[in-house]
Image (cartoon, rainbow, N blue to C red; front, side, top):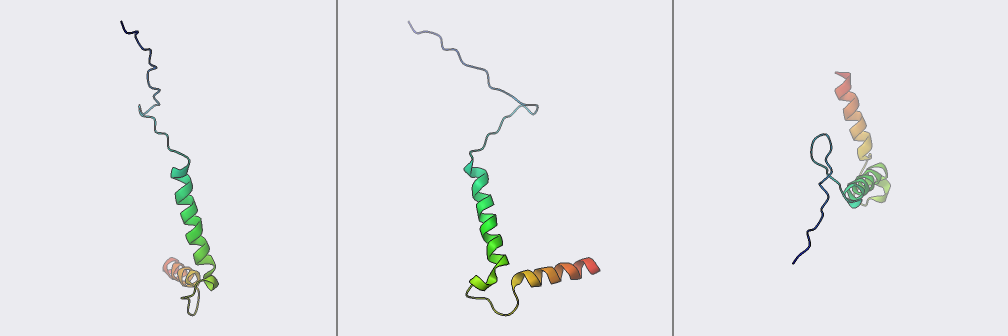
Length: 68
């Protein structure tokens, strides 16, 4: 004869669904973003740079677009 098991009902939030992400699901995109941002901000480390850094071109373009 088997004993009945007692299970807890799932906890729900206002929307009815609870989503829990592991720590690395947020850490990996943040790490990738920071790494790419550092590459943009420090173009002297890159071997294929020529002329002005990319951030200067980006800021110049933003300035042109906002001046219109």
